[in-house]
Image 1 (cartoon, rainbow, N blue to C red):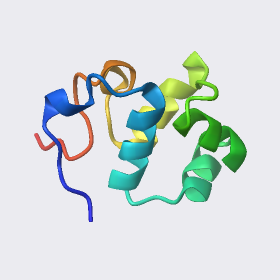
Image 2: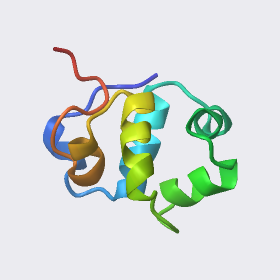
Image 3: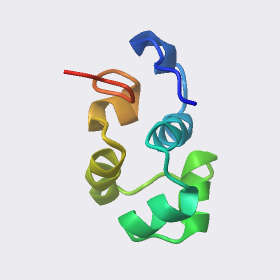
Length: 85
């Protein structure tokens, strides 16, 4: 079960770490997330493991699918997983 994190917890994490955390929080499998975004599961896995990074045109799509802000995705600041308005 996902436990909400403090906003400052993810600032020092990597982009891949934040993608992984957000996917887990959204309760999506890697395969499902990759399919929704239109990439191969291996591509998504490479993003989560910091072997590659999503292109700029994919960042907005990832943020929308995962329910987070692009700012949080890139820096750990902003609307992240578990955010409630």
